Amino acid sequence: MSLEGKLVSEINIKCDGDVFHEVYRHRPHHISNMSPDKIQNVDIHEGVWGTVGSVNYWNFIHDGKEAVAKEKVEEIDEEKKLIKKRIIEGDLLKDYKSFYITVHVETKGENNIVTWIIEYEKKNANVPDPHTLMELLLNVTKDIENHHIK
Image 1: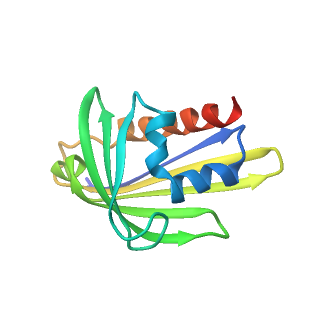
Image 2: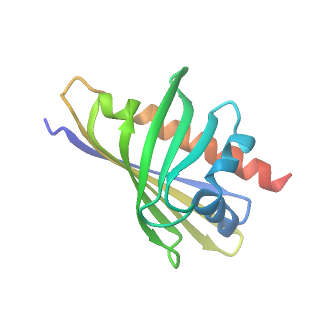
């Protein structure tokens, strides 16, 4: 049984896809205002918001418990509206050797599709696939959408 895995989920959003990308890239520290029951705080620890190499620190609720994640922005493709981040510290690394989260926004007229990709390697076969984290990402996406269509 392989310890490496990949989860992919797509969600349609009614708000402007460019706005969603801009929030996630340049203003993740505002997400706690849009999704306060899920995201408590986001701070920048190194670099400048929305740049490759910057390091962000997230406080969030996962599986009903407070959790933290320190992430490093690995890749930004502005044309594709894609951001890839690597988790470098925090609760997720208790169970996973490596953990990457990619978000891609595709805008086609009124259709805006947000695709979340989680790539990971478990520390052992008893570690579950991170489906609950994917659910959290999708729920935060809905909160950001609802905030911008009010």
